[in-house]
Length: 111
Length: 112
Image (cartoon, rainbow over all chains, first blue to last red; front, side, top):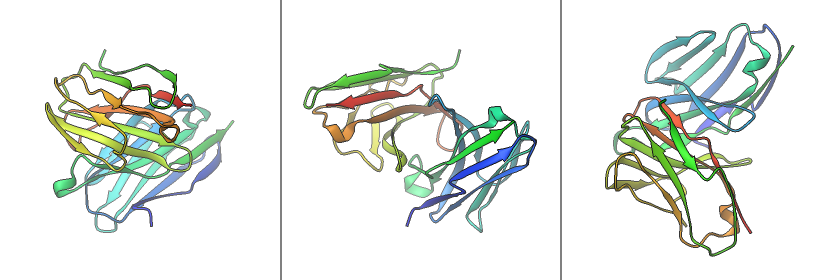
């Protein structure tokens, strides 16, 4: 069983739609990261969360530590949001610094 | 400009020929790490370093070596590359644990 599970694996949306990507994990963590990988391969950090909620422009990330679950929301989606979104958890205690990744969610936003 | 720089971006090599992929950051970050990305497997951590002269194994360290002699550089060394090390490699840095990560542009390595 994977320690970090993302859903869905693939997502196609129409421009303007509200999008949710989910991440569940089974290990104790000290932080959770949301990353965006562009079609060209580059990776950009979107959020780092250890509790609650963060917002940046049209992107919102939430985490529920008790339920071991995080969501990434994109409001008013746009074709330029098309990318792979990756969830990664950073271990707690002695394993801090060790990142475990989900397999990613490929998002395609159609005009 | 704050950045993580990897070199080379692309490399084709032969089995057994030692190679080094360099990684350098200009943000005075304490934490640096190496990942490989393979289709169907996603990103996996190879090694990470919390500070100069402090390195630790990630999930897939076999066949790789790293060193952290100075804060800005964290090279990845393949002493005897094999075809199963063909992959896309990323270096990343962050100020410390639990802080935003900055990624290099990636190195696409092919071992024939």
